[in-house]
Length: 359
Image (tube, rainbow, N blue to C red; front, side, top):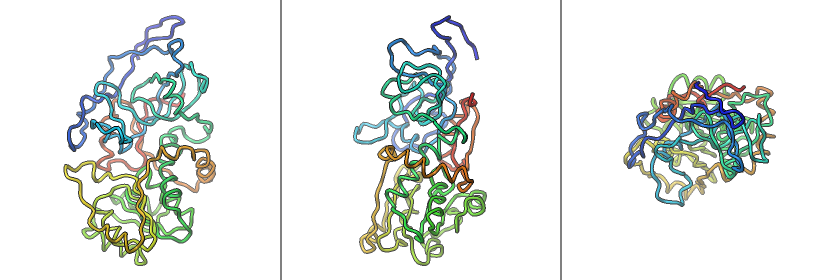
């Protein structure tokens, strides 16, 4: 990396970035060419005096399906998703090390996780700093804070325990079960003593879920022409809890198979991201007679539970009772292809971009 020393004012370095070239229009599928890696901007490795912020060296960046929606322009301020700005680095959750701080919450050398830019270094304002979490437990891999100890974990925990209210012995179905969130929901359900079935899109993923993650049954949805019949086969007694990551035809098939007083957590609808015309849900009437509750949720609403979640999840991680699958891509230059790849299910487990090592 090219550096120019500026004495006590901090070095100026090249700051490689992944930027959005322009908004993705309509419901077009995001493409790798919508993003660009640039290396023509510099940054001073010092927080400006009186800025009351921090300078982060980004180490790990989280790839999440919602980020594809951020590539669209949203005019509706009531939507929680904030559009990326063309020409600027895209933003997401990540893990970083504090290089310099002008904020009382963090000091140089601290490791943190939270919202940051897809770039080597990010200068974060006071309000952005307030939303960061300090990483206190470094006996587990730092990359875990992009997933199981960060957004993915909190999403799984909030959706499963707060929305679905599981009870021992209940029948649980998880779609996109090998993904960042699904793999955790399934294992949390097993810890609760539930019967758990997942679906995934390849033989490799099915085998992993069955043999490594302890799911009771798993099917490859690409090989099942009649999803309603498949779910009836997997759940002859019906489904108590459905954790929905995909929407579309799978949600429709689940509705026919729900048990009385069942709960459906609407977490994501990755099958709908790539469609010009979203598929309708035709079986909603089933939810009436079976008294089924469908509830959408956003993880941010539950961040106050993060300390409670850490108390819940750290012991089984340390004891090896939870298996966590990560798919690591190395280098910001591979950021665009990696982010777009999660839409087609190319990843196995939590997709992470490694920007730099932990030191």
